[in-house]
Image (cartoon, rainbow, N blue to C red; front, side):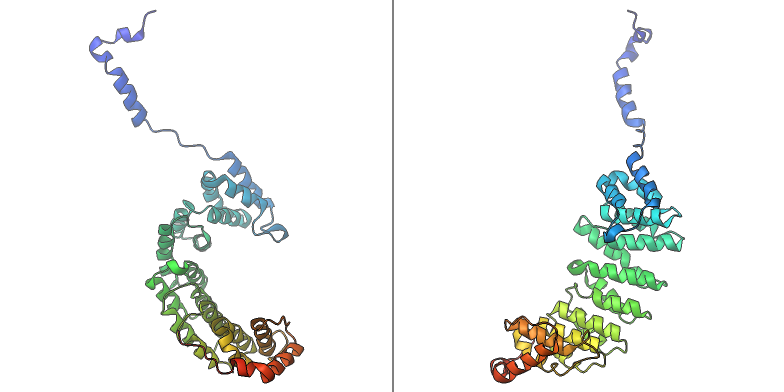
Length: 331
């Protein structure tokens, strides 16, 4: 059979394999087609409840997450949908996939559309970082947003910084502490709670200062954070100094935090709350103190006036001699 290469001069025939190999490199490969399964699922989001039957995520979102990185192109397009069911579902799926989705959220932060920008910020906060470097990267992106003109954006940025926990450096902790002075009460409360998981020593004094705030909800959040940290020098003493806080809700939380920090050594300070009935049984520092003391000494007591009287009797007969002389050491 006559070969077409015989029409080519012999001197050029040797170049054919080389040309063919080069063409494989130089000719761009066709882009991977979009994932049909992801496209169909994104369309289904419009007809589905956001979290049916109290579940965290809808079945469709779970299926999109199961597709992994292959679903990302369709999810990115879905985020731009005017249908909030679709855009919200796609954002949720992207956050759960994490990894490459993080860079997508970062790019979306530059959007001129406030809704898209805020959605991207929330996605970045919730996104699952796959490496330590991603955690650091996200934290650095969030820091400037803690000073954004939009209070909702500031709140989400502060929340995200707090979720970085022990990985958050001094600069990030300082951003959260600065938010304790924010003009928005909601941002300030979020900042107090965000300091719970950070390990920088400057967080403790900032939280103790917040105990003097005029906002009872901020004081409540600060007390909760101090108890959660349970290691800041002077924290136990700072809480005892505020045991007469005007809010029963705050006083009850002080009881819980004193128990977390002091343990059995702090029982005598919890006893001081046994006459504080608060405004209702829901916000009764006395009942909370009785229950916690009972747990420490091996008695299963519920939140009730009977439990309070039982602990009072125990303290007078036995407890004061066992625990009255103990002090909670400075840490």
